[in-house]
Length: 567
Image (cartoon, rainbow, N blue to C red):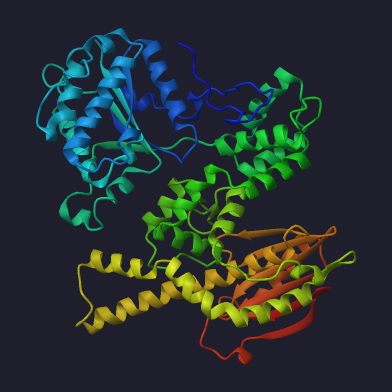
């Protein structure tokens, strides 16, 4: 058998001279110990990261080695099946279809005709089928259930319990069952179970797959692997990539497989017109990344869908506002869930310093979070602050103070609903199994929770509105980059116009002292090779009179000019 390609450059519907190129799939994750140890395990990785390609290559390798038989079965077709009995029968059909389509004669031989699948109680269908296969082949069986997290909450637990029962009862001489089995999806098993019920643990439903040995994930491409992948295109066409192009591709994608390929497509096909005589430079990759962000491909639809989930949105809001740590109301599972989905990357110390998974996602997530925050500014508004001499950032931010005063209350009300605060509190109530109507202690507690979540939403809103305002005003005329990371207690924005950089630091009043904030901004000004910076300080007390919140002060600090802008 031939190993299938793991990644390719050309995008569906694009006419280009590129061919399919690949990197070896199996080095991305070694599961040899899992299979040899007869373990059951989970593989999870974000969407479009090469899971299916890896699994089919792994299946082929196991079958080629000849020691075991490996069967791959996708459960993607069950995405909308909610009835348990129907789902069990559908899974049975999918297993049988995998047998019939296999290149392994032993599998094809024991498959059933479509109209004669074995009949049994739906609660044991899957157990019986896996037992039947194991008994009727001459080698041990390894099974990969891809897209396992497509199963609806109703069918999920019966499916997992049948696998657990077979695992616990497996016996080489009697009730045979797969020696090794893996569930594959976007999420870890704990998040499968979270679909069932928020109080599932207390009802004994939290571990129908507690036989799991380990949860594994696919690694992103390394910089060297990006170089090797792009190098295959160079070897085939003669089109060269400058070293800076590889560096910029690594910078923008951090090895996310779909982005690595999409960036190459954008650079070669759109930026260079499929002219293989033209070298791919670092600047071409930067332009490709910018256009990829603006084009909002279908790949980013999954990011949009995830940000509609309250638990994900709250995590990303906490990262956005640069808080010193996550609010207590955010569970560790929520944070890990965002990491498993490929949206978030852990800080170096394992907790603080969390940030979006790569710079492209960072920009896309910012734009998605600001969706609906219509600034209402007229076209051409920003041109009065931009001319050949440069950008009048003072005038621009003074206009923002006026805009914030006029629109912040309305936007806060809208954004609070988008942040699903009521849903958050409702879930907390359900998990605690209490009512607060006649219980003063619980009522006060959940009032505090609501205030905390509201404060977080308002803080996130302040950062997002400033970003959206700058994007709206400067759109097409300047480059705006926003850096954010949990644990730094600040958000940095750098506007570049006519070759000059305008560093802006965003802070929430009270998080750091004034002296600390000015010192931090001074460092950021140095980083931007500038001599002037703007510190925008938001007062999260929405009830305070505006004449006590809006302010402007200009001062000197370490040979720099610092503007402190109160909002």
